[in-house]
Image (cartoon, protein in one colour):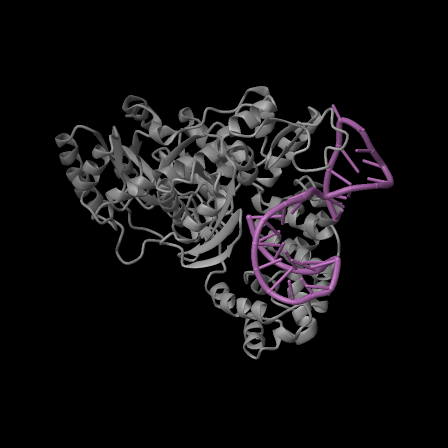
Length: 582
DNA sequence: GCCGTTTTCGGCCCGACTGTTTTCAGTCG
């Protein structure tokens, strides 16, 4: 059983928290940065450990010899001796306790030493017994805050889905559109980079009247709780999601937007480039500090050369604007400097959807309604791809070959009746050996075959997925890992291997736009595109309104550096027919 | 513990906010 990157990253974060609770300096940051890079690494770090040892693991950004050795130790033995010692000194549910708003590693350490608090339950009990306020450095207010935040922490110990957070951000942007003090309002942070899950919603507003903006923010009808409200920033919770607002003056808006969009590693690259040019970049602007004695004297030291817009911030560093989706320190600053940033696919480039369902399987609408919905969006084509029966299909949802033949007739009948091209397809199931759940003769009759894994969604799926993409009748590999965000992590597989096979076999790899999936993820798309594979961005719609989810898929593809040329369903009908061998 | 096209040693981002302090610590982003 392989160890997932997430699991390794969680361990390293626990390491960081335990060290921080002991007042160790600098190491916690090192472990945290290593954890983040392990989590985001596009291949299995455990495999690196097994195949190349500590040397291979230390190739991961911000992972050095010491942490690499610990990763190898964990992969080989299932534990890390030093971590076990730290846990013995501070035997607490660190992740659970620090998930309480306002409770960090140091607080955890103090409350364990003073009150023996080890779990969320202990924390709640101590707060109710009014014991926490007796501890030096704590008071009644802190105790009340802990008590009110424990319950929330218990309910939501996971990150928010992009698909939940983005509509909330859309709503507050509409709210701010009517506030005269707001000159500009943009989403920042990981939400602006369209990460599949986010910690909170970051909003940035340009205004000369910060107080009025903060007031309008806390008055927002969707704000359930005001967490804090200062003169230049404020935080509320809405629908269980934390929303952070920052207000800046217009001439610093671009610099602040760049700064708060991140990622941190991207910003470090940008800052390094500034330093090379005798410039300083921070959230207030770009400053020429070549003639300044002490550039660190104050935040706005030197002559301001940029700040009002992001374009001018990047331009001051001789760079074009880097699209937010690329700001992950995966080579984008170098590409920008060399003028080789990709011309990323856009939502409006999409001309059809190749994966959707109807009442024939588990969809909510008829073939005709799904076709008309696509036509209303202005699509040129769509592929009706209901579930076939087979492994992973429960409750009689999937169609057997006879039913699929029957459905084929109805698809052809509807197709003859409408102006857009309707492909007859299926979503077949990939079994554990990489075979399909539909007969080859029927597959050959269909226009566009989507093959997806729906069962046995753990372990290494490389061979299985290669088998599927090499099947001569398969055109699209649907949601390749089968992951469900916050619920299951899905198959592990070597993206490069599957993508190379897919490129050879003329099979597209799907970015499933459903916000619970976003599968492939951006990092994998980047590897796939580099390997020459074609991408399909599909919504897996079960109703016409779900076609709107396509934006999540497109932005995920953008996170993978995909251009419109890389994405099958931005092509013309004729080009898609050619790809499908029709 | 990590990192380096000025460093293989000596630095590590830092400001806002809150609550507890009576000058600051912890958390968060």
